[in-house]
Length: 165
Image (cartoon, rainbow, N blue to C red; front, side, top):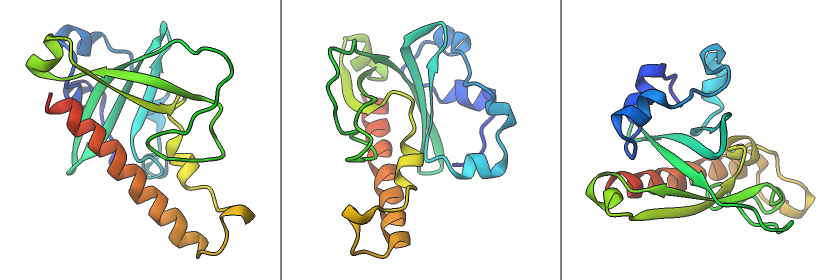
């Protein structure tokens, strides 16, 4: 992912009012990300520290950042689920249902989209994990490359759906 400034992040938020975008909290320490830190991200996601039910994600789509606000559903019990973006079958304990209001008129009419994503938005780390013995049989670096590409494809598809209402 290419480095983004605070202004670029705020301008990318497609399902927020101008006021909501202006008041959106920025992720912890994103200003101190090194080039390697940005390079290791396939999307930027963070939770609002003052309201843990609200989160933000910025996904690069065709070299343009598309950002959106999400609402987390309340967790019920200790159920596990697979993340719809990284599809890691081992890290299933901290996956939550997030809902994004669609951009534009559709969002103003109450239309939204939901997805299951890691609550800490750690998908980039999950897809870069070297395969274990259960996943063997493939070239480990080819598998990691495929996982990264699939994460980018799935997260970008969700961002497009939010943006296009």
